[in-house]
Length: 218
Image 1 (cartoon, rainbow, N blue to C red):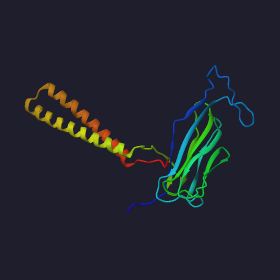
Image 2 (image 1 turned 120 degrees about the vertical axis):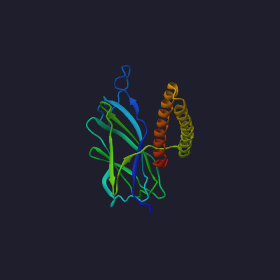
Image 3 (image 1 turned 180 degrees about the vertical axis):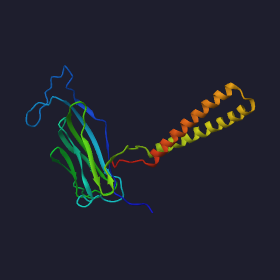
Image 4 (image 1 turned 90 degrees about the horizontal axis):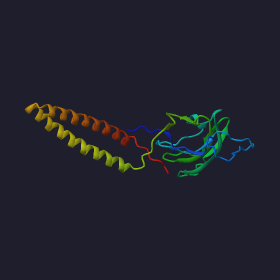
């Protein structure tokens, strides 16, 4: 019997440099809401947060550490917005600043549903905000999104095929080495055996990705 659980996960797109403070020809001045100049690099990034588990996450009962982005003295939030949300009900996702953190709240957080956020921030020394959170049974964790489930299966079958061919070649070379004991056959055997070990390792990694794949709700 499979154990049902709440599993909050997140994934981030590559951050985009919006403003480069070191660009000597830059004549653009960026101001904060209080009209102070932003002198650091400015980045934009999208985050996807969703419930990959089997149980809904109750904000009043299940939260141990709020799901939030934590900023610091070297990383300052400039702007944020919810780009999209997905769910069978009206989720009422919202983002609220609480001190140095941008905290997520909701009315419903059902399995396999979530939201996409864009945040823009300034940063010194390539720093970035920390995303954290914990619910009953699981901490919020970062995952890689497998865009093509069938692509993973195709890769798995391809490596299995080449692995079988390599194993066949190794077995034939073993027979030749045992029969003739030629030096060139021994070196060739070592080469093919090393290649076979590499294929086994890659096959293992693909299998893990295939088993532990995550699919974004968007």
